[in-house]
Amino acid sequence: MNNQAPTPVEPATAPPLSIGINLDGVLVHDGLMTPLARTRMAWVKHSGAFDYIEKNIDPTEDFAPYFRWVEQYGVPIKVFGGIFCAGQDEHRMRWGLRTAGQLGAKFFNMQLYARHADGHTLTDREVADFFLSALEHGAHSGCQPTLEVHVDMWSERFDRIEAVANLLAQSHVDLALTLDHSHLIFKIDNPAELALSGVQAGSDGGRHRLAPHNPQAFYTQWLQAGWVAHAHTRSVATGVPGNPRGKRTRDVQGRAIQYPFMAPPAGSFHSDWKAERLLDWKTAVRELLVHMRLQSSHRLRAPQHISCEFIPFADYGGGARYSIWDNNLACAAWLREEWAALA
Image (cartoon, rainbow, N blue to C red; front, side, top):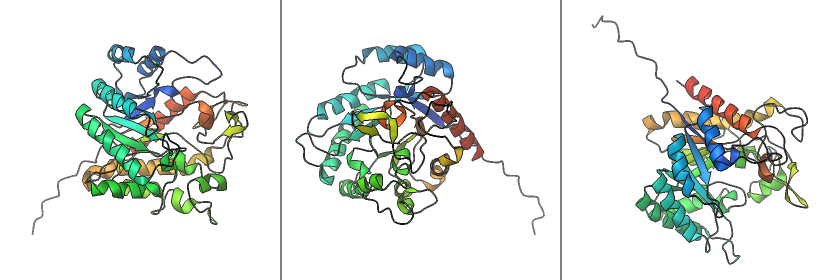
């Protein structure tokens, strides 16, 4: 019999979590002058809150100075990306992947419109082929393309994602997604939004497919399949009908895909703010962090970093007068606290 005392086991410590910010969210609000891109990069640098920048392609923007600013401020652009229309934007997609590789970006996040340039609705095969083309060009530049789950895109019909993944598997390719829980959870208890995604409202307001703590939730299944390669964080509440202060068009208000992470100053938000309304979103993000923390032992592919993405624009913080920048800072701090607690 061995009477020797067992060797104490050191408690596990969490590796650092890499947290970024979408450069569109480096501003106070859209009622003030938007800072210049160089100024925004200086804000990120001096805040010390973020490890990298996520940058979207603006077709009208001269991108050449960014190479100099990345070196000057020492904050890498780790994620590059944009919005694309099949049959029209393939050249811009290839340019973006090439530029991303030159910058050292590891991921190229793609929002792909639901319709082709000629007006027809993209088939699952066409989505898969767009991704395969991006993957081929990304292999040359050293940058992984991902498809973002996003409103107004092919992926707003959440059930299509598995179908596209199955088509890619026939080519021995894994689907790579960008997961932003906000684009799913804000639809809970909103029948019109649920209908756009083909989700039955039922008696639970769609929670059976969209809420955390549910093995049938779409994003839970995507994580378990290993399809989620990148992630965004932007808090939302359920059952908010829209953003009355943001207009998509003169007659159409914005959608409710941003609910302040922190209590907004009086009058700066379109409705009364309640911290408990963040619970579903926070729980879902915690589940993501747990998955990321455990992925090495389970050998599942999982995101290696998260971009905070509180932004202006009609569907998000457009027309509001709380500080978008402060919400990004607070969310980053919360993510680090949650990550450390998992140790």
